[in-house]
Length: 184
Image (tube, rainbow, N blue to C red):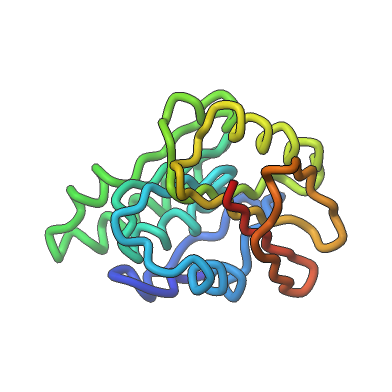
């Protein structure tokens, strides 16, 4: 697993804990092709696992990245590895300022972090009710900026609990994985 684009392209990342389902490299690359430039955006990687989505966003120019997960061991290792690789280019300090790790429940942490331009929502697929809980929280707390995008990774065939104002602008299928992009 490597970062696929931007200033950290090719940096290796450690796979997360065994029971975690990391986003496949091809899906991660496709998501960033769909989203386009990350320049100066605030990116939230909810349920970050290894932190790959957020680290990719930073590599592609995100101004601020929040990596949120209950278990952050793999995130911390990958954060440290990227910082070490950037130290030679004297970018480690900027990286540490812009990319922060938050340990805990995303539903509790999210309201404290302010609005974001892109939020990547990929909770464990074993708890599909969590999708609805998070989508309601994001809508109620207005966690997305006015032109923000919510990117949801979910299993193919799972009907997301969309409200009237929460309809996907686009959906993309990659094997058993579906990506839905929503702009409320």
